[in-house]
Length: 630
Image 1 (cartoon, rainbow, N blue to C red):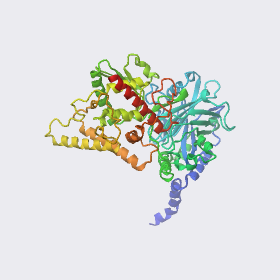
Image 2 (image 1 turned 30 degrees about the vertical axis):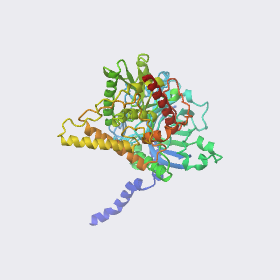
Image 3 (image 1 turned 120 degrees about the horizontal axis):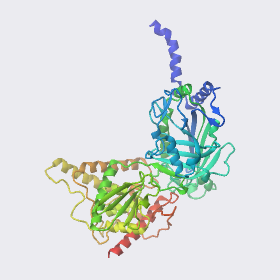
Image 4 (image 1 turned 60 degrees about the vertical axis):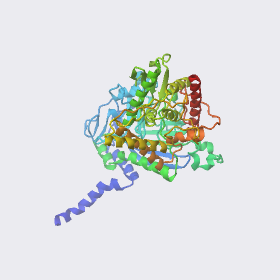
């Protein structure tokens, strides 16, 4: 006991010293962590001319300030390493390593395209630059990556990776890649180069300024309209800084309801508020990466890298429940960005139920092609890379072409009967879930933007193809052996769950008759008879039940905890209550480029107006299909 009492005075300060970074405010630990790291690395040569010859550690802070429709701001610390892509790691690989275990490490597979044929990180960067300008590959020399590292090999959410690409000869900054990750697991790359660079930086302390069009969904409280006014600080001065200002943002009326002064046009500063919607930045100072600075970082910030996602979720909770901002549903990926300066390189993968429904729906399309000899459908999948599924009466063939920029050209457009662009697996999933009435599923998914075509003629052909009269084969035949009690039970439960889910989503699970108070469109019928049902093979009752319950639970949870700007699951209800009215549609179709799809809009057009326009197009296509059917 006396021994413990003797060492207790020494244990208390040691414990306090070890626990201090965990209990002190992050601003204190962040400031003193940087000072200690600078002190222990003072006097060590880290530069030769303009070149940084060692890897760096950046003690940075990220700041976000929202202006419209409510004022909200936050700041929290972030930690980065600056890695010379072509340089070798430090000798003490226990402290830092690439593609190996260490206290701090980076993995090549964590960056840029996962499906690229490039092996090294440099090859990946050059491939990403080539999407914007083929000349970059010839002239890019040194590449510096600034990213959040793994700690003890554990990955953490990293919102932004920045690639600084320098000229081979002069060493000046040639291009910058901004690799943005959202909380849905998607990844997008913006390219900053001479084509979108300002003549001079906005401020003297900045290195360069750029303008890029927004086309990636990052925050559920913003749509994708507007531009990023982007400013880059000089990375060669042991500091880093990326500043983004969202301008020319077009907010929907439901989003602005928190600011009635703006919504009613009474605020004299309305234009100023809407032109500067959000300001985001990450800025920090660096020290050489060596064993002592790595240990310093881990002492002062043992969990900071893993707290990025919880901090983002905390701020999202404040916006949703304190400020009561509406939420935008995650939109489908855009086929291509304007000016070619942004591309999504990683999409949200489809679920196993989506994959199953796709196989069932494709089998249904093959049957329809057999009823219409000579018909062919080319499904161009925009999500999860670009690929094609060509369907004929002989079967279906998948053509993967993720590296082909012009995927559509691989199909013979003249010989194709119809070319359907699928922007979401929801087309196939809704067809199978609403198997008894595929026309209703087609209508709902087209109006909500899950599929389209390059001309109304292809939509008309697609509708005619799928309007074959219903056969005696039901969508769910039930168990072949009625004595199989477990299978019969799952079948009955599946039918109940499916009908309840459709009713919950605003669907009718029986055809609307003439006396129905609801609109008879959808569903549509070209010859007075319902179209052929999508048949789900026997033995899949449990899989279908699990999938329907997952969809139902997901929509119920989101509807209970979220106030959508426009609830995407209730599109059928909007069609029946609003879009079926004889009022004319005042929206004019946007053409973002040659070959734009029918009803393809930017986010600067309100979601409700986009749906209303697509419904009008669909109604015209149905009328045309009926005329041709006669």
